[in-house]
Amino acid sequence: MKRRLLLTACAALLAGCRLPVQPPPQPTLVVPPAWRAQVGPGAPVERDWWHAFADPALDRLVAQALARNNDVRTAQARLAEYRARIQVARSAQEPSLSVGLSPARARAIGPFGTPIDSTVMQGSFQAAYELDPFGRLAGVTDAARFDYAAQQAAFDATALAVAANMASGYLNLRGLDAQLALARATLASRQRSLELARRQFEVGYSSRLELSQAEAEYRATAAVVPQLERAITQQENALAILAGANPGPVERGTELARLDAPAIQPGLPSELLRRRPDVAAAERAVAAADASLAVARDQMLPSLRLTASLGAYAHDLPTLLHSPTALWSVGGSILAPLFDGGRLRAQAEISASLRDRAVFAYEAAVRNAFADTENALTAVQRLREQLDEVEARRVAAAEVLRIAHNRYRNGYSSYLEELDAQRNAFSAETAALQLRAAWLQAHVDLYRALGGGWAPAPAARG
Image 1 (cartoon, one colour):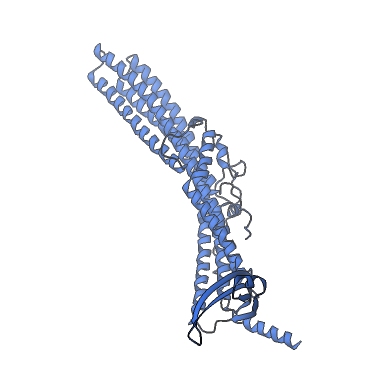
Image 2 (tube, rainbow, N blue to C red):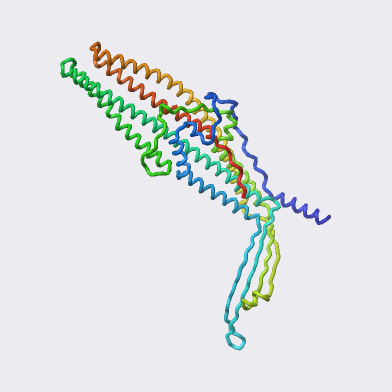
C-alpha cells in the first residue's frame, strides 16, 4: 500500500511539470440562418456535378483533368507523404528491435615480443521500448492523423478547383464558338449587303457614300472573325494544359444554345461547413495545431524508456553459432528536463500561436465560403434576369433589321437606316451569347462555392 501511494504521489508530481493549457481565442464567427438569394427548387449538389450539364465532351475533359492534371497529381503525392508521416509517428509507440554482428581480427605483441593473432566474433540482439504514461507519443500520432486529414481535404479542394476551372473554361470556349458562328453568318449577310450596294451604285440608284458604308461595315465584321479565332485557340490551349495534355484542339460536345444548367438546391449555410473541402481543411488544421500544442506541453514531462540486449561472444564463427559465451543486459532510463533556458516553454508558446492562427484562418475560410456562395447565388439569379431582357432585345433588333432591309430594298429609306439596324442586331445577338455563357459559368461558380458535392472521407488509421 505504501508503494502504491508513493507511485501515485510521484505521478501527480510529474504531472505537475506539464505547462498550463493555453486557451484558444474567443470565436467571432456567426453562421447566418439563411441565404439572401435562392435559386431553387432543385436537387442537392452531387459530387460529379459537371454531369448536370449533360455534355459528354465536358465529362471526358473533366475526367482527364482529374487524372492527369499536375496540381491534382502533386496533391496526391503530398497525401501519400502525410499518410507515411502517420506511420512514422506511430512507430515511436512500438518497440524497436535490432540485430548486429561485429567480426574483428587483431594482432598484438605478447609478453615475450611475439605477435599474437586473435579473432573476435560478437553478435547482439537489442530491444527498446518507450513507455507513454502521459500520452505524449499518442499525441504526436494524433497530430499526424489530423495533418493527414487536412491534406485529404486539401486534395479534394484541388480536385474541385480543377474540375470547376475545366467546366468554366469549356463553357467559355462554347461561347466563343457560338460567337464565331454568329460572326461568320453576319459576315455572309454583310457580303450580300455589300453586293447589293455595289449593284445599286453601278446602275446609279445609290451614291458612293452608301457603297463605302457597306464596305466599311463588311470590313469591320470581317475583323471580328480572326479575333475570335485567336481567342478560341488560346482557350483550347489553356484547356489542354489543364487536362494534362499538350496544347492543341479540344473536343466539342453540346452547342451553347442547347446547354441548360439545372437548378441547384443550396441548402442552409450551416451545411456549407460540411461540404466545402477548404473549410474542412481549415478545421482539421485547427485540430492538428491543437494536438501539436498538447505535444509541446508534454515535452516538459519525463520520458521512460526500457532497454534489453542479448549478445554472444566467441573467437570463431562455429563457436559463435553453437556454444558462444552469452552476454545480456536489462535496464531502463528516466529523462526529465530540469533547465533548458525556457526553450520548451517558448516552443509551447509558438505552438499556441500556430493554433490561434489556424483558428483565425478557419474563421476566414468560413466567411469566404459564405461570400462565395452569396455572390454565386446572386450571379445566377441576376444574370438570368439580364439574359431574359437581352433575349427580348435580340428579337426586337432582328425585327428592326428585317423591316429596315425591306425598306432599303424597296427604296423607302437610305442605307444608313439598314446599317444602324445591322449594328444593333449584331450587338444584341453577341450580348445574348456572352450572357448565356456567363450565366452557365455562374452555375459552375455556384457548384464550386457549394463545395461541389464533396463529402468528408473517413479518417486515416496509421
